[in-house]
Amino acid sequence: MARLFGFSIEDSEDKNKNSQVVSPIPPNNEDGVDHFVTGGFYNSYLDMEGSFRSEVDLIRRYREMALHPEVDSAIEDIVNEAIVSDTNDVPVSIELSKLNASDGIKDKIRKEFKYILDLLDFDRKSHEIFYNWYVDGRLYYNKVIDQKNPQEGLKELRFIDSTQIRYVRTVKKPDGTKLTPVNRNLQNFQDPEEANFPDIEEYFLYTPNANAFGQKKGIRLTRDSITYCNSGLVDRNKKYTLSYLQKAIKSLNQLRMIEDSLVIYRLSRAPERRIFYIDVGNLPKVKAEQYLREVMNRYRNKLVYDASTGEIRDDKKMMSMLEDFWLPRREGGRGTEISTLPGGQNLGELTDVEYFQKKLYRSLNVPESRIASDGGFNLGRSSEILRDELKFSKFVGRLRKRFSYMFSDMLKTQLLLKNIVTPEDWEKMSEHIQYDFLYDNHFAELKEAELLTERLNLVSTAEPYVGKYYSQDYIRRNVLRQTDEEIIEQDIIIEKEIESGIIPDPNAPVDAEGNPIDDLGEPIVEPDLESEGKSTEAPELPKGGEI
Figure 1 (cartoon, rainbow, N blue to C red):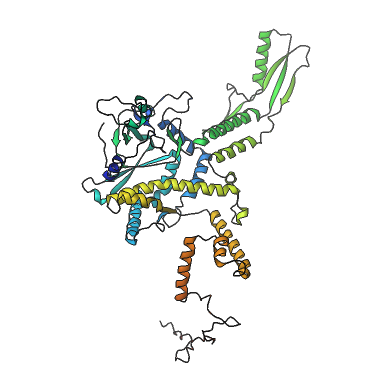
Figure 2: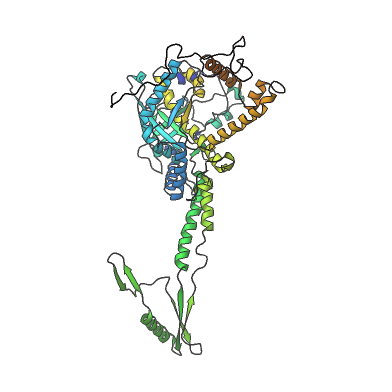
């Protein structure tokens, strides 16, 4: 279908059309979508390595991995660190302290952001939204508006399954010319400066009944009508967006094989088995086998417990790989003999299983210490905090920044539709808009507290040398590590607090005992309340329950 459904923000398109920037290199895409000319839905192909044939297969593999207990436990650790939804507060809020705008604009932005959170029902569904984004490696939302009244903004945000939609870039076909890929366009020109670079059309292809083999029919949706947030991980060779679970595919498969082989080995080697050597004398082969079978059936006692009825019955027709061995022995041997085969040794060792478990957690960027169920939670000094926990905290911070792209896209659409800001203003404002997530990991907080304590101790130590060897400015910049903005801001706040009487003036004159004095050297006496006819005694309490 040639028609595009949905809405488009014309200002942004006109800006791109009027751009005079010309380059033979296509724009660098962080979403793994390359420019292609033709092809069906999801660009299906035959993978000779046998890993996956399409992006749908890849997403389904990620979802199957998430059902494994170890992977699910690691994902839950990551999601619980990134999204704190077990409190009464909203998991995320907007931070506009660095935004250079009026208070009225800031209030409108906060109001619209709260409206977007209400549309997403983010307070209740934040865990599921982040979980789906982390597992699939991408997230799609359809931004629904009133086509007759677009200035009213977003009306609904509808979630779209990642297996039913894809972001597509195609080369527009010029009139009377053959469709050619972008990377071959320069071959037809002697002078690259005279090359006519084709326009790139971007849209989303939505196919509700998509399958792993791909479909050519679908609904094309405009770029502005869809919110698309990916993981930022891209396979540059196959042009696919990857999930953070991609690195754990091999580790999980190895862990599964080790566990399955361990179960088979223990079932086959755990019990002790006996070897019966039966003396058959000089009997012919057929007679000897018949005699051995009769002896085996005579002495073999196979009791079977029926779990459905609770009965115990003798089931001699069933053969098992764990049964005893019956071997004939000719005349001249040692006669009938019974010996015992010992069971398997080292059945209690789990070193290899623990190794692959740690390898799986490392591939998911989760600290290995979180595997142990008896692992405690240390809230001591930062020197006692594991380095893996600090790395994990930074990893969760990067996930939050990438996930915030979803809020930015929705907020941009809402502000532009309601004419609160222009596209040019948004380009300047977007980099100063931050999203503050609730934090449940105290490692970074403990680190900052300890650093501040050490700096204040250094300041107290260097206090006698201020004005002699060091200046106040040197102490604030090199010991307290204050920036120019922080110095100016703190000076203004301190001056206001001194004027209001919240804190005493450190530069005020004092006597030898440290008591404040006025400019003439006279001590400042506090006003006597009793002399002014005011009593400092506490009021008499009511009696007899009077109020």
